[in-house]
Image 1 (cartoon, helix red, strand yellow):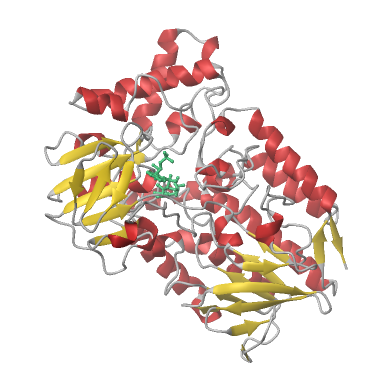
Image 2: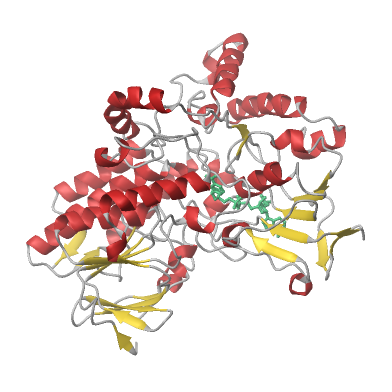
Length: 541
Ligand code: N01
């Protein structure tokens, strides 16, 4: 790679971290504690990662606090939230607070997008190049690019001819977009689409929702949080953060330890109602242990969900489109949204629902979306809530080349290979956090990130203190890890759905489980035991 403007201030760093969301912030903090030279490059203009880019109307987190925050006492002891599921604005405030406490910004270069990283086999360093031509040469490179940093825009015919306002949810203008009174289309009903729809539905002039697959949205049960009460509860926080590590999805609850078929219909209903009222992820995460493995149990959960959803929708055609008689996929095998008023929006006279399953988008013109039946849906604005090249896209969109010059994109073209969901062979000294084959999208973010950040800090500390310059996973270890990830996945129902968790939303992407589904405790212990055995599945030199 050419080296047009090597940054002399950055020199030959020990570590370069890429991305300043939860994973980058935690990793930077832990590495600074080691006393090594570490910098972070962030493409955006502020901290927050997903919460910087995703500032669309209604954006908020689907995990509750204090589970969804760092477990660092210096941080939680002086911070309180106003809502159980905070909005992106409050999450941005939190990131600014974290920065004010930890002083991270001085080691972060904002507005700096990494575009390439080539490994120099002679000196065991990465040559990392940014969009503005800067080159730095860290010993270790840690990608904290998140699972949703490469947006997906489907190739709709004529999209480029549209003359109105057009934005993807993950590239929403920071200054906001005035939509009040306008005719707005939302394409996509994933977690982002559901949030936009329920937020703008009451204020736009006309809303047309283009739905391909219904979202089995669950009640968020949002709650305002009282400062005093939170302060009183803080004695419990250390326990909550330890508990996170004992639960399958890294929250503060586990599946109910009974199979659905082992209890009476009355008892089933009782637990379903209880979990429904608790809201959040309880209806999936605290439900009967076989809900996501047994087809009959799964079907019964769907029937309950359908009844609850339909109660809130007036129009029978909309009922069938939003909560169909026959589920198009197993319940919760695609990521459900958490909603507050989603279904009520469809009872408004200004809201129209197009079932793309029956009537797909044929073309987009300068002022309308035309469906297969020839109807022109005239709109002033289109919101593309069409998702991401998830989990791997943030990594493969960078031109990363390993020892033999092969790119990571080519290496993973027919399937992902990693060891511990953090490293891949032929790419020494490269790590990724919150990436493929880790608990990632099926776990609470901060829980997964802290496990990986701690493991990385220990690993790099070990390398530096022993004068080692190179660490690379063995091929055998990544084959074993891949087999483990795929094996665990086939034991449940998740692999049967065409979801972004499986890479199935991107044309041409291999369809395979991209997440480690063995749960946080197993993942944690496998990472720890590898480290305790002197990084037994790696070659160190
Ligand atoms: O993306 P998605 P998202 N024509 O891929 C549809 C996290 N997140 O941005 O299901 C028409 O889920 C597609 O339809 P289908 C969270 O983990 C978190 O909503 O493929 N439609 C689907 O409805 C989440 O799961 C939070 O048939 C097309 C939608 O677009 C993840 O990010 C908030 C289409 C895409 O849904 C991604 O969510 C937001 C086409 N050609 C996001 N192509 C919080 O924590 C795709 N679609 C709050």
